[in-house]
Length: 199
Image 1 (cartoon, one colour):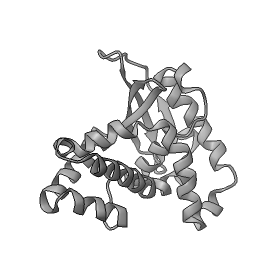
Image 2 (image 1 turned 60 degrees about the vertical axis):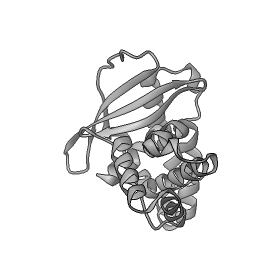
Image 3 (image 1 turned 90 degrees about the horizontal axis):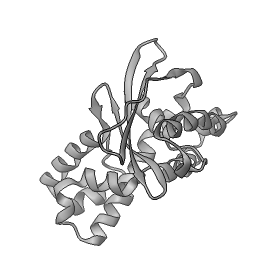
Protein backbone atom coordinates (compact mmCIF):
# COMPACT_ATOMS: atom_id res chain seq x y z
CA UNK A 1 0.00 0.00 0.00
CA UNK A 2 2.90 2.37 0.69
CA UNK A 3 4.22 1.84 -2.83
CA UNK A 4 0.74 2.55 -4.20
CA UNK A 5 0.52 5.81 -2.27
CA UNK A 6 3.96 6.71 -3.50
CA UNK A 7 2.92 6.61 -7.12
CA UNK A 8 -0.37 8.33 -6.40
CA UNK A 9 1.30 11.23 -4.64
CA UNK A 10 3.76 11.74 -7.44
CA UNK A 11 1.04 11.31 -10.02
CA UNK A 12 -0.91 14.31 -8.81
CA UNK A 13 2.07 16.62 -8.33
CA UNK A 14 3.62 16.30 -11.76
CA UNK A 15 2.03 18.77 -14.14
CA UNK A 16 3.54 21.95 -15.53
CA UNK A 17 0.15 23.21 -16.76
CA UNK A 18 -1.34 26.54 -15.62
CA UNK A 19 -2.78 25.30 -12.33
CA UNK A 20 -4.89 28.39 -11.65
CA UNK A 21 -6.99 27.71 -14.76
CA UNK A 22 -7.82 24.12 -13.90
CA UNK A 23 -10.68 22.55 -12.00
CA UNK A 24 -9.76 20.01 -9.30
CA UNK A 25 -10.59 17.10 -11.60
CA UNK A 26 -8.57 18.60 -14.45
CA UNK A 27 -5.57 18.91 -12.12
CA UNK A 28 -5.71 15.20 -11.35
CA UNK A 29 -6.56 14.03 -14.87
CA UNK A 30 -3.94 16.07 -16.69
CA UNK A 31 -1.17 15.34 -14.22
CA UNK A 32 -1.97 11.63 -14.50
CA UNK A 33 -1.04 11.92 -18.17
CA UNK A 34 1.93 14.21 -17.54
CA UNK A 35 3.64 11.65 -15.32
CA UNK A 36 4.07 9.38 -18.33
CA UNK A 37 6.27 11.98 -19.98
CA UNK A 38 8.48 12.20 -16.91
CA UNK A 39 8.90 8.42 -16.83
CA UNK A 40 9.32 7.82 -20.54
CA UNK A 41 12.40 5.73 -21.16
CA UNK A 42 13.91 6.38 -17.71
CA UNK A 43 12.67 3.50 -15.56
CA UNK A 44 15.92 1.54 -15.47
CA UNK A 45 18.04 4.67 -15.13
CA UNK A 46 16.02 5.90 -12.16
CA UNK A 47 16.01 2.49 -10.48
CA UNK A 48 19.78 2.63 -10.47
CA UNK A 49 20.22 6.28 -9.52
CA UNK A 50 18.43 7.21 -6.31
CA UNK A 51 19.55 10.83 -6.28
CA UNK A 52 18.28 11.37 -9.83
CA UNK A 53 14.99 9.77 -8.81
CA UNK A 54 14.70 12.01 -5.74
CA UNK A 55 15.50 15.09 -7.84
CA UNK A 56 12.85 14.13 -10.38
CA UNK A 57 10.25 13.57 -7.68
CA UNK A 58 11.14 16.90 -6.08
CA UNK A 59 10.84 18.77 -9.37
CA UNK A 60 7.38 17.46 -10.15
CA UNK A 61 6.02 17.23 -6.61
CA UNK A 62 6.72 20.58 -5.00
CA UNK A 63 4.69 22.84 -7.35
CA UNK A 64 1.50 20.83 -6.79
CA UNK A 65 1.78 20.07 -3.08
CA UNK A 66 0.31 22.44 -0.48
CA UNK A 67 3.37 21.96 1.68
CA UNK A 68 2.75 24.63 4.32
CA UNK A 69 -0.83 23.52 4.92
CA UNK A 70 0.04 19.82 5.05
CA UNK A 71 3.07 20.43 7.27
CA UNK A 72 1.07 22.54 9.71
CA UNK A 73 -1.70 19.95 9.86
CA UNK A 74 0.71 17.07 10.47
CA UNK A 75 2.50 19.07 13.20
CA UNK A 76 -0.90 19.45 14.88
CA UNK A 77 -1.10 20.99 18.35
CA UNK A 78 2.67 21.34 18.48
CA UNK A 79 2.70 24.03 15.82
CA UNK A 80 1.41 26.50 18.44
CA UNK A 81 4.39 25.76 20.67
CA UNK A 82 7.01 25.61 17.92
CA UNK A 83 9.29 28.53 17.12
CA UNK A 84 9.39 29.87 13.53
CA UNK A 85 12.74 28.13 13.07
CA UNK A 86 11.38 24.81 14.34
CA UNK A 87 8.36 25.09 12.01
CA UNK A 88 10.60 25.82 9.03
CA UNK A 89 12.92 22.90 9.81
CA UNK A 90 10.01 20.54 10.42
CA UNK A 91 8.25 21.40 7.15
CA UNK A 92 11.51 21.02 5.21
CA UNK A 93 12.34 17.70 6.88
CA UNK A 94 8.74 16.48 6.50
CA UNK A 95 8.82 17.22 2.78
CA UNK A 96 12.24 15.61 2.27
CA UNK A 97 11.09 12.49 4.09
CA UNK A 98 7.98 12.38 1.93
CA UNK A 99 9.99 12.63 -1.30
CA UNK A 100 12.43 9.91 -0.31
CA UNK A 101 9.78 7.64 1.15
CA UNK A 102 7.62 7.57 -1.94
CA UNK A 103 10.10 7.93 -4.79
CA UNK A 104 9.91 4.22 -5.63
CA UNK A 105 6.20 4.49 -6.33
CA UNK A 106 6.91 6.75 -9.29
CA UNK A 107 8.25 3.75 -11.16
CA UNK A 108 5.07 1.70 -10.59
CA UNK A 109 2.59 4.05 -12.25
CA UNK A 110 0.64 2.76 -15.28
CA UNK A 111 -1.53 4.86 -17.58
CA UNK A 112 -4.53 2.55 -17.46
CA UNK A 113 -4.54 2.03 -13.70
CA UNK A 114 -6.79 4.94 -12.67
CA UNK A 115 -10.56 5.25 -13.15
CA UNK A 116 -12.10 8.65 -12.37
CA UNK A 117 -15.47 8.64 -10.61
CA UNK A 118 -18.15 11.33 -11.03
CA UNK A 119 -17.15 14.57 -9.33
CA UNK A 120 -19.16 15.66 -6.30
CA UNK A 121 -18.84 19.35 -5.31
CA UNK A 122 -17.81 20.05 -1.73
CA UNK A 123 -19.87 22.06 0.73
CA UNK A 124 -16.76 24.21 1.17
CA UNK A 125 -16.01 26.25 -1.97
CA UNK A 126 -12.25 26.22 -1.37
CA UNK A 127 -12.05 22.44 -0.87
CA UNK A 128 -12.58 19.59 -3.30
CA UNK A 129 -12.27 15.81 -3.42
CA UNK A 130 -11.49 13.95 -6.61
CA UNK A 131 -12.49 10.31 -6.29
CA UNK A 132 -10.80 7.52 -8.22
CA UNK A 133 -10.46 3.75 -8.26
CA UNK A 134 -6.95 2.38 -8.80
CA UNK A 135 -6.42 -1.09 -10.24
CA UNK A 136 -3.35 -2.79 -8.78
CA UNK A 137 -1.11 -5.17 -10.67
CA UNK A 138 -2.99 -8.19 -9.27
CA UNK A 139 -6.34 -6.79 -10.43
CA UNK A 140 -7.44 -5.54 -7.01
CA UNK A 141 -9.45 -2.31 -7.19
CA UNK A 142 -8.69 0.27 -4.51
CA UNK A 143 -10.64 3.50 -3.83
CA UNK A 144 -8.37 6.54 -3.71
CA UNK A 145 -9.56 10.09 -2.94
CA UNK A 146 -7.49 13.23 -3.49
CA UNK A 147 -8.10 16.23 -1.22
CA UNK A 148 -7.39 19.63 -2.81
CA UNK A 149 -7.43 23.22 -1.56
CA UNK A 150 -7.92 26.32 -3.67
CA UNK A 151 -4.94 28.65 -3.22
CA UNK A 152 -3.80 31.83 -4.92
CA UNK A 153 -1.78 29.61 -7.25
CA UNK A 154 -4.76 27.41 -8.07
CA UNK A 155 -5.88 24.05 -6.73
CA UNK A 156 -3.23 22.12 -4.80
CA UNK A 157 -3.25 18.63 -3.36
CA UNK A 158 -2.85 18.31 0.38
CA UNK A 159 -4.11 14.81 1.17
CA UNK A 160 -4.60 11.36 -0.31
CA UNK A 161 -7.03 8.87 1.24
CA UNK A 162 -6.64 5.19 0.35
CA UNK A 163 -9.37 2.78 1.43
CA UNK A 164 -10.54 5.32 3.98
CA UNK A 165 -7.09 5.95 5.47
CA UNK A 166 -5.93 9.57 5.20
CA UNK A 167 -2.23 10.10 4.56
CA UNK A 168 -2.42 13.42 6.42
CA UNK A 169 -4.22 12.08 9.49
CA UNK A 170 -2.02 8.99 9.64
CA UNK A 171 1.17 11.03 9.68
CA UNK A 172 -0.28 13.43 12.22
CA UNK A 173 -0.72 10.49 14.60
CA UNK A 174 2.87 9.38 14.00
CA UNK A 175 4.26 12.88 14.57
CA UNK A 176 2.16 13.44 17.70
CA UNK A 177 3.40 10.15 19.14
CA UNK A 178 7.05 10.80 18.27
CA UNK A 179 7.03 14.33 19.71
CA UNK A 180 5.27 13.10 22.83
CA UNK A 181 8.03 10.54 23.39
CA UNK A 182 11.15 12.55 22.60
CA UNK A 183 10.26 16.16 21.75
CA UNK A 184 10.01 18.21 18.57
CA UNK A 185 13.71 18.97 18.19
CA UNK A 186 14.56 15.29 18.44
CA UNK A 187 11.98 14.38 15.81
CA UNK A 188 13.24 17.08 13.45
CA UNK A 189 16.82 15.89 13.85
CA UNK A 190 15.82 12.30 13.17
CA UNK A 191 13.81 13.31 10.11
CA UNK A 192 16.76 15.32 8.83
CA UNK A 193 19.10 12.40 9.41
CA UNK A 194 16.71 9.97 7.76
CA UNK A 195 16.49 7.76 10.84
CA UNK A 196 12.71 8.13 11.09
CA UNK A 197 10.31 7.96 8.15
CA UNK A 198 6.73 9.06 7.79
CA UNK A 199 4.16 6.74 6.17
